[in-house]
Image (cartoon, rainbow, N blue to C red; front, side):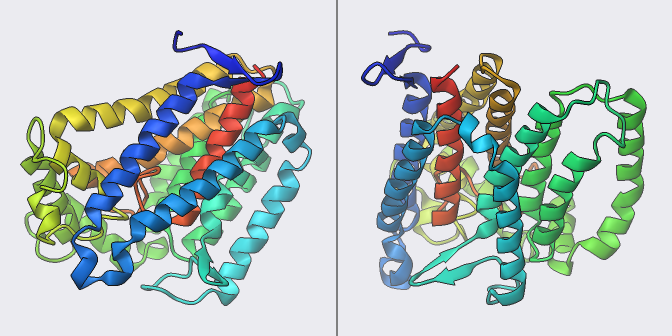
Length: 371
């Protein structure tokens, strides 16, 4: 069986086995890594010691969501894309109005015994809305700045709502997905140049008026890690130390010293890659990044064979979402990017993140099964 082989289900659409295998491998590695990350919490933080069990439950729910979406023809979702987007914006408004403040942010809505993060689900809704616009907009190419007002608004509104929480990392994910999807259409070169100029000019204003103090501190500590390694840069410094400890082949499962001795903070959420790299070294890290790279590249392959532009745009959007998460999370773990609180897909603990990723994978599978 080759990488592109697919297995049919009772004569219907065929499951993309290559994509499924990559998702299963990442999920299995993620659960094992989370078990290692929280193994030291049995006595210090008992509430977190069983996080890997909770994660398995969320994965089960995510599989159900992803399978349900994959079973539905993705083209049937197009007619509801804008309605889904409006619903997502309403949920972000509820967060700003009623969500309790946790560690200086308002991001989670408590429902029963669980908490949900609407900004996570909004990633998929933004992808669907932008894909619908790309598929339906009749304007000829190359597109001007006026032509791009609708997709920019579809992106800017959730970005503004999420920045108000505040959540810089998630807003960057929206922007990356939008940029990747809009790259599918030809844009007038003067529009691109004007957009770049506006972005460059607005950066000083964003630094002064848009970013919070702790966000500026994270960027400052990133630019001078040695100076801030015992303050704002502590997390990133310990992450780099753990990765360095891993060497070529790693220290072994449950043997990472930075993790086991409690030096690595937020290892179950923001820095799971540091745990993995310390235990499995460069070899294991290359394997993991290779799996993520395969999913991203495969999404482009699926897009190239999609039946319509909506399916192609959805595939590119999902691939961009995974790519952005991996680049931002691994980048901050190795010290190439500031800490922005972006999760590593299916490795970081969190139900909303898991459900969002499986929803995206379900969309990608749906397009692949009907290409």
